[in-house]
Length: 271
Image (cartoon, rainbow, N blue to C red; front, side, top):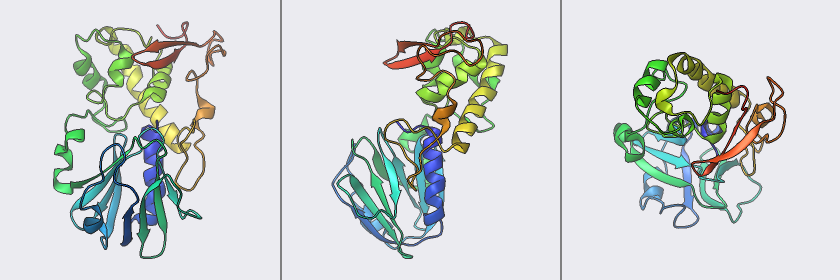
């Protein structure tokens, strides 16, 4: 699944073509993805000017001069294609700018979504209302984590995946951040010490920032809007490295199931 760095990379790629552009054509090519397209999508956006781009957690935002934002989620396999040679079977939403650029939302598995939300109410939109702070924002601090995790017996790995604790963190980057902070992913969240949380916050921020700089992590389906792959996967310390030597101590990286996902860690470095 595309995670926060992949969505941020996508938004930055789209901005080069959409920021300030007029949407001359808006064409849904099926009725739905994970849920139906907004009934007034074409009417609301055709002729609109894109006033800016943004991201909240794993959602991309396309703001317009009509006071409404197109909010997209890439689901498991979604990506935007820019000026494709042709429109394919899995290109389910097509935007064309007045300058002639074509942007196609491609989603073979159709687990993504597209919504229209009033900009004034974005913070209260149900998907956003209960979210925690952005990982790169100033609100993510050791004090926030200490308060949010106090008394929690669930594993720290699972708590960090809870969007109410931190918005936008996913499996890849939580595994990597916990490794950098030297924290066992199975440790009860409420028992993670203050010094460990002080290590964890900058580890989260660094992993996310480095992944954005690298264009995200291409695993199976993800690619940037211009077709380029993300290269942060070349920098993984533990994720998907079962049996390989730890980059710090040389011990074998281990994988185990946790909360319906796979977790990777170094049993020697992470306590």
